[in-house]
Length: 436
Ligand SMILES: Nc1ncnc2c1ncn2[C@@H]1O[C@H](COP(=O)(O)OP(=O)(O)OP(=O)(O)O)[C@@H](O)[C@H]1O
Ligand SMILES: [Mg+2]
Image (cartoon, rainbow, N blue to C red; front, top):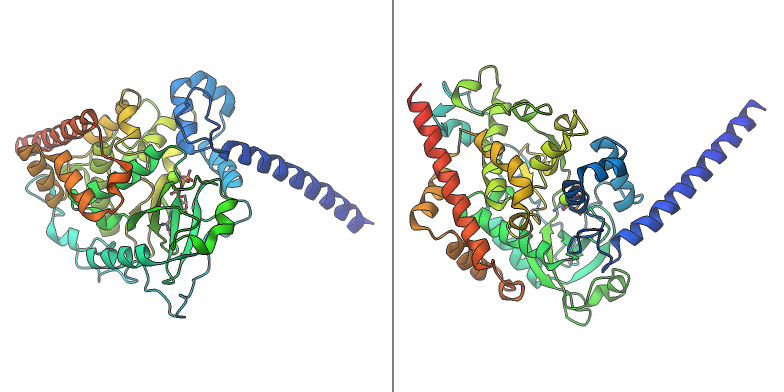
């Protein structure tokens, strides 16, 4: 009897869940349908977290009402329902057509941990070389070049929903056995931002932290996409659209911002400076080395869809800084992976007025740098050639560079201005450290 009652209750619950899931399914399709722009943001990717943030940015009151003061965590769970219906977090390994396993995207083991250096900082503002040497390796230039060559020559043998974020993205299995997350931009600006940010990372010498990225034109009759013609039909992707392929990385896990940036609403951010490292262990320091690059990168590209979006969400979610950081993941070897840079450079530059109030304090909260990154910034400042160098790299590395186009003159100037500001900030940190 009791069991029957419980079973009855269970069926009611299952029915409720099914009804809720189908409602969400309908909604997700509506949100993901191309050409259905979000209210007030006609050029936004409908249904994207970016879209949610931008809507919230323009009308905070309205957004709060819509969100019902829901926590970011709840929002994430909700989005997960929308974008990943019933998908496993990571797909099983695929063997290539030749039956061979592709090599792993990242070296499996971290370099052996060395002794913690006497001082993790040198020259007042640079991470010590010993500490930098402990940063887990990312995607090496050779591995990257070889994967990009293979991926560009490979055929897409299957396209699956889920595992790669929003419902317009796909997980592609390639004929060389590797996998890639394919990002389709409802607005071409998104793919442009993703690709240009990727190449800016090379210019800054930090590209090893980003999964290798190639562009591809989707042509159902073309050699590369022909095997998935059927799947393309159900994707709502426009024929001829340029998509990005980011190399798949196994077993990524969430990353919570270091304690330093776990600010509470209305509080000033602490500063990452030589005098503030007491009590931190080697693992925390190694992580901060990577964060210092990330914050410079996100400032230069005006990417608001990472730590900045969490800072923004503090308004209604005081615990948001204790939750996973968007678009940042950790590889099994401990290294950080900067994913999804679509908000950078193009999109971000259009919304500077809104997001720089968060981006600038974040930049100013960093007074420790990798010396190599600071040197790149100094050179780009001295030669005033940030955009020209970016264009050169982009054209050299990406065969489809011309198809998507480059930054406008105004955006190119904004990039140089931001490089100059970062350089000035580094000098300021240096002067401050010298005066102590
Ligand atoms: N190259 C990759 N390798 C492994 N996992 C990936 C890769 N790209 C994306 N993912 C997985 O998909 C998730 C979402 O990716 P991404 O941010 O690129 O898509 P999105 O559409 O912007 O989704 P969201 O709105 O959740 O940020 C990541 O958090 C990660 O779990
Ligand atoms: Mg994302």
